[in-house]
Image (tube, rainbow, N blue to C red; front, side, top):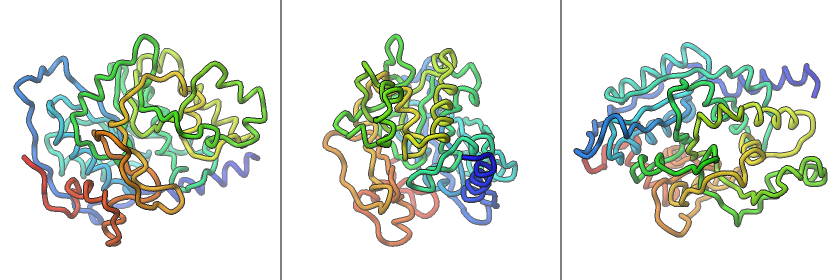
Length: 335
């Protein structure tokens, strides 16, 4: 791709993903109830850091996710949220105001992602929403968050937790793993990369000696100290730069993570990412839960529960998201 083509693509991505408008006039979220620590909480030893992105398009999902996290946490006062938004000052100000109004008791920090620089690394994928720079924020957590934050739980904004996030945050990463996530070794791993990738031994040998399995990057526990020491942002960026020169994958921000980490991550029980509830990336059809217990529901895929509810065409499982909707739904949660 020429420099001029890259510039036009960057301009297109930034205009498509732009969320620079006054949220206060568009969305009016309710104030969430306050939840309190159990008597067993120890303030200094049980802090849980959570990183999420914030933008106007998916803000309704983010608000529901936050409410579900604090509602089910044993120690909600010990939660520390780290929100990443795009570099627009006006957008960040509106997002900050929205969070502060609905969650006045929440301890949180706001960070700005340099979306123009990120957009220059992005190649178009099978779904335009996957190409927004903010979808790549997880690549830069180690640089955005302060060094005092050693471990973080990264969550997409289309999730709802029905269990204590402290259990997920306490996942063991062993002696060497940089991140932990549920693995899905029955998925066809080869489909995440193009035929030209597999036909090139210099590229496909990347997975030599690794039991590489698919994992979803919407729910991860990350050791930021190990990430920084290993300079993993650079490793991911190098694959994104190669993708700009020769197309080796099709699906947004996921494949670079697979290239760097697949077969090297710590395991997490599947209950912590019941993903795919948004259906596939093209039609967003309804799906059922995977067999087994559930701690986190994830509407990955094209279909989002708030959009389907508004259109009065909800999927059955969207009713599990609705009680956490701070925009329209009265509180249906147990106190």
